[in-house]
Image 1 (cartoon, rainbow, N blue to C red):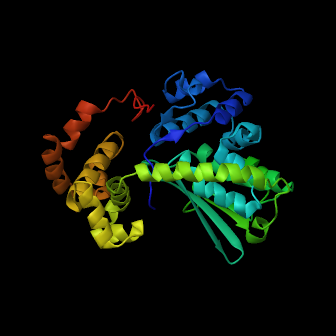
Image 2: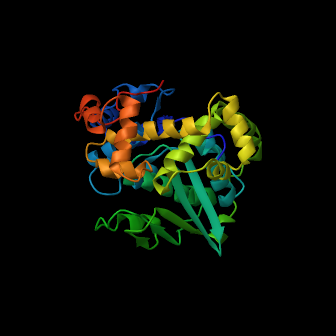
Image 3: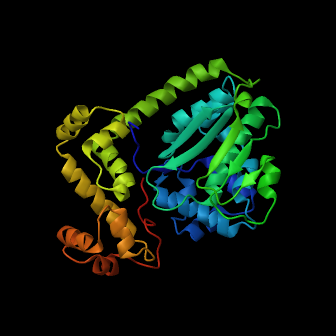
Length: 347
């Protein structure tokens, strides 16, 4: 978990090219997502996770049918993909390709790919570190379809997963089953792509060791630089936000999740001029503001998600932070005509 990147997502040129191939002008998608109209023209621009999810929701709203993500992957031109994706398509095998995607994914977004290979089944899921809402269906479809497409294009064979599991309800459509070529389970506890372990060992005829010798060191250096820029304090707050609802996390719990000793974690956050109690308060403040920006979120529910035993405790703490009540803060700061984070574009 070390080296967690900031909340920055890069939208590659290949995305906009594929969107256009679906018959959707980039300007229409950006307008629907309430994002800057020229975003697609700036390859160096970043968006937050909230803004990135808004793009996917806009795509779902504008494209007819439930398979926008799958159609997007089918329309994608791998020749203009970023280096991290290019390296995967020239890997030694399907397993090596997935490992490269998992390793370098953070160069494009704060998303972790979890790969668990047990008893002949390889289960793959993703975790968006800064997400405050469920992952849009189209984004999940793109992630899973891309990994399947990697295997199919890399091996030259029409591979099919063992099964795909979705949290969403059944869309009453056969498009996902037809594309993946396997059973689809809806209403699952998490989104999961399950591949045969034996398929992962299939070689890629297009393996290009010379190209990988050039790309891999450059990608590793970029990842190292990204990790170096990520402070321990920010990593601690991410872990705290994820675990607040289950109670008040202790320093030892956070240290264990970050893969370091309690003493090392204490030393690092002290060197950064803060302490664990202050980070806990900051994490609650930041997450509280984010949750309050959703007008449908109940105050009692927010208090629970922040680890408070009752709403009155949350009210007292919030008044200390902001000098007003949560309801009044929401009235003063939340603009219902605009989705949260829509004007926070990072450059």
